[in-house]
Length: 97
Image (cartoon, rainbow, N blue to C red):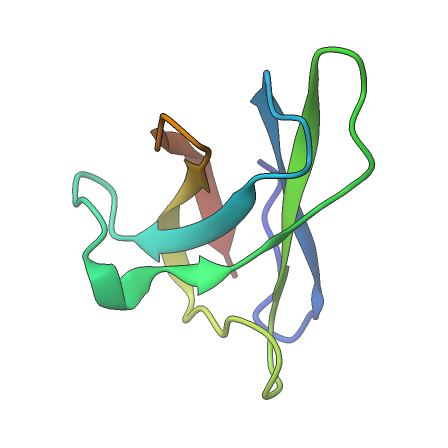
């Protein structure tokens, strides 16, 4: 992923193959090499789905309704809760400058 400024406030998108956009979706950010704990998860939302999946998105940056990430590199995670499954997907590094 492209670096984001710690001063910027923007949506971070992660594509999830097979998502219909009707499942519950959450995102978390950890240090690289670490797994998220329950307190790390934040509600996310879906962009309109395509035939093969959908983009999960979450607002990142300063402000009360966004996830504030300190400068450094973070590992993004997506958790999708469907009827029978709950995949937890590591989704790439997010550099914050």
